[in-house]
Every structure is written in C-alpha cells, then in structure tokens.
Image (cartoon, rainbow, N blue to C red; front, side):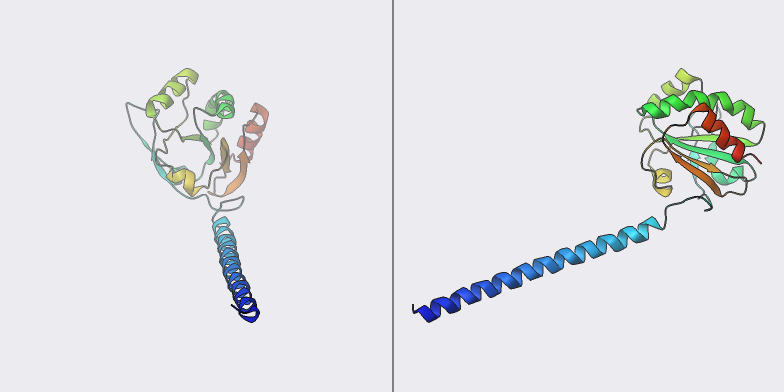
Length: 189
C-alpha cells in the first residue's frame, strides 16, 4: 500500500466518522425538538386559575350503605374544595382533621369538600376514614383517571373551585387550618 493510498484511506475514515457523528447529532437534535414541542403542547392542558374545572365522575368510597357517584358538575352553584390525597402521604394525613373540622360549618354555607383518594386498596382507605371519622365525600380514583385529567404531581394538591365552576386557586402541599378556612371563604357563594 502506497503512502497516497494510506492518506486516502485515512481521509475516508475521517469523512465516514464525520457523517456518522453528524447523523447522530441531527437525530439527537430532532429528539430534543420533539420533546420540547410535546411538552409545550402538554402544558396547555394543565388547568389553572380562571379555567373551567373539568368534570369527572367517581364512586364515593366512604358511604358503603348507599354507594353514591360523585360528579363535579352536580355541585355547580356551590364552592368546591377538590383535594387529591393518599393514605401514605403524611402531609395529606396532617390536613385531614382540619378538613373534617371545617366541613360541617362550610357545608351549611354551600361549600363542599371532596377528597379524591389516589390509593390502590379500598381497605386501606376505609381504615383511614374510620381513624379520622371523615364525613365529607371521598371518591376513589382507582385508575388515576381524574389524577391524570387534573395533571396532579405532588400530593396533597387542592383545587378551590367557585360556584361558577371556575378554578379560583390551586395549592400544592398541605394546608394549615387558617389557610384552609381562608380558601373556603373565598369560594363561598
């Protein structure tokens, strides 16, 4: 093999390496652009303040004798606190007594508390309900459909919905008694 052939061979290897690296770079760039566009479009479906709260229908788990279906649209004209929680969530557990304490007072003022359980097992939820003597509606989102609909990330997450069905506020994390009462007053008709 001559020196000229060795140089040509080396140039060919460099050219092939350049083409390969450029191709990989273009594929990565296309993947990044696709991910950004997908996330941008996905973010548009997140519900925030001023948006109409999306309707849903779930079975209420804490009323065994008379199993009811909880449908958000049935509460139009009332203020609604829509809380997403689970029994394994310590901050969720911490706010439950506050919700139970305020429920009778605000139910009489046309404000409903709905606590959507994201747990998998109904038995665990029933034990939790009995432990805290919870009386407000607790529907069970066993398949995560409502959680996905509302794009719930961290729990507890709470939506405060006005009598007109529009979201007034969204809070991620546990609420204190004072903050909870302030939000309930805000959505009171």
